[in-house]
Length: 274
Ligand SMILES: [Zn+2]
Image 1: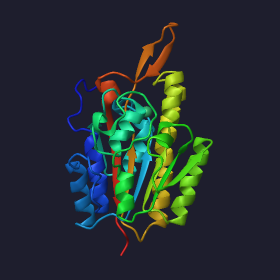
Image 2 (image 1 turned 180 degrees about the vertical axis):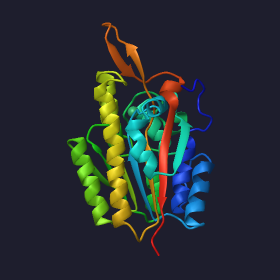
Image 3 (image 1 turned 90 degrees about the horizontal axis):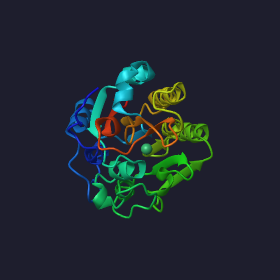
Image 4 (image 1 turned 30 degrees about the horizontal axis):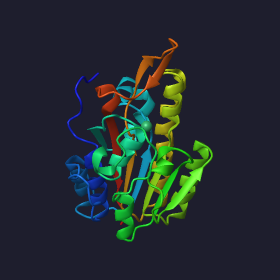
């Protein structure tokens, strides 16, 4: 396992997603991730993506990704770019997604501890709306993702279960009316906390995430042929095993450590068919 923190910050992602679509980044976004912008330029020969589909999983650490490659092999085979980054400190869900979609440090976007509260600074979703883009955000209700980016003029789909969330995302891909779709699945995080990150229960949830992403990617390839599309698989933070106060093995994420902070996203451009 890598015992160093990755050199590139998660703050760089937001600017690169704005760059992909050719829009002004949100007000506080850090400089765009150059590996991703160069990849986009190479695949689209300088054109922009008119569609972005982000599949946001939760808590699948880089070390899990590397130690169990068979969980994600089908997703790696379908994508081009592995993007290692270092997430926020402390590595908690609302703090990390806050940074992912503002491009700003936690002190700037306002969530600095585990707290599900509304982000009031400029986000990628605000920037997309200003540029006339239609945005859909999908999650189960009550999760951080359903709270921290609320109150924007975008469409929210908050469902009861993860299969409901994913079925709705599939419907939206078929409808082909949104320019930016964010589909969030926290099932790995949920189970990893209750068991341990390397329990068969948690690892099967990670595999479910990569398989689900591949299904969406396949739908997009078949149904969005006339669009230049960027698809991404991106988690918020990592995780590690620990022994709780009752002496039981569990999973968590709270430390300034490579286990909890190193993550690897996957990206792929599908250029429009001429
Ligand atoms: Zn999380």
